Image (cartoon, rainbow, N blue to C red; front, side, top):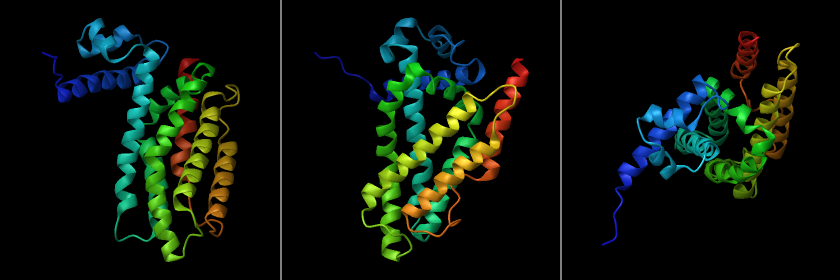
Length: 238
């Protein structure tokens, strides 16, 4: 008789490994975290760990994929609000996205150092479409509503949704590069980050046929602490 798998138990055990990895990435960082740390944190065996993940990199990829699912779940209610006009939904979408990340800033900074490494260039390219598949349909629904309301100049909501996701992903990449590779003697360049956000915001507004300053892609109060946190972490390490 074929062995049956308790799917709920399997998913729960896998989630425990992901939870442990998130904690250790936050407290120890990727380089100092070992897979033994992870299975010890869970109270599992080496064999149990490798039943779910074949390497530390695969584990971190799974952490990031779960985060993409969580982001989509967090912004989906904003996109589905039946009473909000499209432009308000779009702003809420970007605001909610930025605040979700801000609440997990320390963990995400630790992950960025892995995510932006040359060794993970292929991994980044593999995960980007998966993130777009989760987010683009939510944006497409907002864009379709905006076209009906004639507040957004969009004729192809689905395709434009993916364009917006690509724009946001590019912004994330540029900001991540600034966060992890700034000149330690001068500190993170917040002004350069602000200019980068402004350029991407302007591009988004033009794609949607909006006047300048109609949208805030990243709130200033959300952007600044990312660079302050990195600067403080560098001082602590020196």
